[in-house]
Length: 304
Image (tube, rainbow, N blue to C red; front, side, top):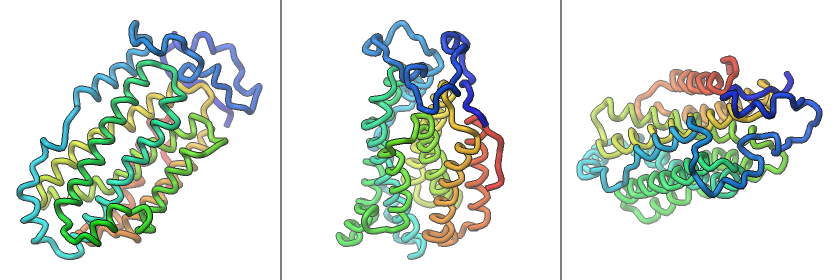
């Protein structure tokens, strides 16, 4: 499948519509509306990308802080949980506590430096702030629930101490440091990080809410999952503006890779049956989430 133009507003692509992107196998940022040099990038108005600006304002309106989350009842619930349930929750929190920092690493080191559109830079700047809030929230949850200093150190250093977390982290870090992957491929990869790597764990915590457990944890999960859903949607919007898209097969390969890692994480390394969920249904749920993401990226659903 050949590279194809993004399905975006006509005024943006008009100046590029006569370019044959197949003339070169090298990714050319100068024909990319998001990446080409923009001397207006330091000033926000006039708004040239209203859909991107709308996403930024939507994110801004969703701002929250950890002080809004009441954890006063959680410790009592925590003590009543089975050891297997505490094990599952603490290890999921350990992954989350590290993952937001990885997302920020990508935003600071790559996307914020590459993208030249002011509206998108506003979104990325606000996303960085919210990822910091998420990371603080997860760290506070671990600090509240875990009293043993050795266990706490183990969880705060999960990328080094937990192979299942390291595997997910390494996959994301690989895409940050990738020297030959195009901007479009890396957008897809981080849409997968925020849309797939988080999805199963979010669902597992929602399962606890259904059981009436851990009100502080489950409320913070609602706030964070809402934010991450918006971040994933924004990645899909950015992808629509890309002129030199990967092939559908290349996109599917990235998504399927992420799905396999997430399924292994929640059905083998840290199986959801520890909290009474069905591992087979979790696998199907992760595939459902991946199919939805593929459709948003302009691809067909696939059987993983």
